[in-house]
Amino acid sequence: MNSVLRWPTFLILWLAVIGLFERTQAEVSVTRSAHSLDWIRTKVPLNSASPVYSYQIINSYPHDPHAFTQGLIFNRGVLYESTGKRGKSTLRKVELETGKILQEYLLPSRFFGEGLTLWQDKLIQLTWQGRVGFVYDKKTFNPLYGFLYAMEGWGITHDNRHLIMSDGTSTLYFLNPENFQLIKSVKVYDNDIPIANLNELEYVKGEIYANIWLTDYIARISPKTGQVLGWINLKALLSKEAQTSSAGVLNGIAYDNKQDRLFVTGKYWPQLFEIKLIKR
Image (tube, rainbow, N blue to C red):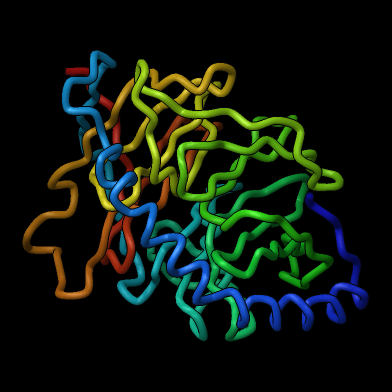
């Protein structure tokens, strides 16, 4: 069950959550390892009949190579980014053209930042194993309140009615944006094959785009049925020349609905790309 916690009550319960997190961290790690084989089997169906899209790079922009990108959104000319790693997790406002950090909030060191979305001038950020989400004032980055959830936090977006959340499995969760109560859940399939590792999310033209963790693919998902409508293959998007020893997996999708621009990046990537999809 999800619950909204107002400040300062949230701070008091937050301490209890921290204690719970410390006690269950090992258990969560074991559970995640147990599921890893299933995740590997269901990355991307090799015999998928769904359309596959390639890409054309329209623009390339600088991106902080020290940013472990977990969530990414575009709003009114700037990017908002959530980064991960305990002790280094941040909420950021970033200038698109230069990659310059215009504003930044450092999360408490016990939390691992995850997905990010914008709802009515409030930034909503998930944490991974902390089972806690944070809501901020978009302009000041001041924390307003928090909310609890039972699953891990991975990606989050919205469809103008519901918050849509992933937890690394094949399930998407639709939440009430006012009280964070669960409305429904949808299983994601490509035909009859469940698609796990659903990570960073973005709502684009009536579809849910989802990074598939540890792959170069983005799934285009029907929010009504959970069926995969197509695959975006972003293999070799980051050139060998731009790759560094720390550059990680593809993760981070942002959409500019005013100018119909799609942006993607990855963990510790030195570049962020505007791309155009090309159907094979």
